[in-house]
Length: 196
Image (tube, rainbow, N blue to C red; front, side, top):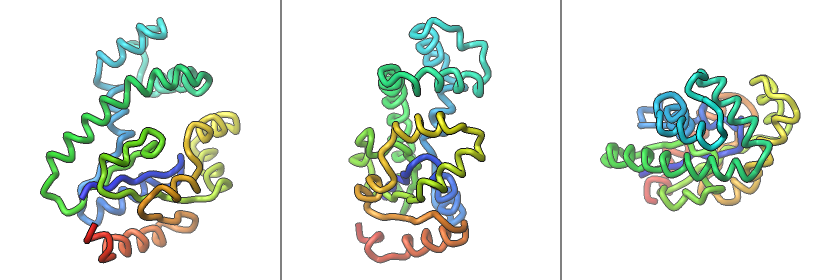
């Protein structure tokens, strides 16, 4: 069973993924696939350089992603262009991983924009992590984002409530990691999940 984990930025997707991994399940993150594109895919880097007329080949990954973020989070048209370049590459890798692990009971994949890009059809079930807006802000500020950057990133995603409405299962991540871990274990043990 291929299960997508989604949620707003800083909702705890990576933490939930790590919990499921520690339970013995194969887990991966589409953000890591995107990072691999930025680090290893010269065709991808050249496409960015050609489009924005900048030589991104000389940047390290942090500089590159910062440059790209400053462009796309200020211009919806450029964000759409970038997503049209990235998403097919990422989805191809996701499907390859599913094929490699098709005998596993559960495979978990973190997909931040699952519903926004309508990828739920590629999964057997979806889990949304929910956290409140204030806690999201607090977590993002700890990552070094300012209020303007936070607002831009949040505005490019569905709200936490909308993701919950669309998901098959929900994990509430407003307290502690141990409480999130308990919810993950309950979810795995639920008969309804096993019978999907």
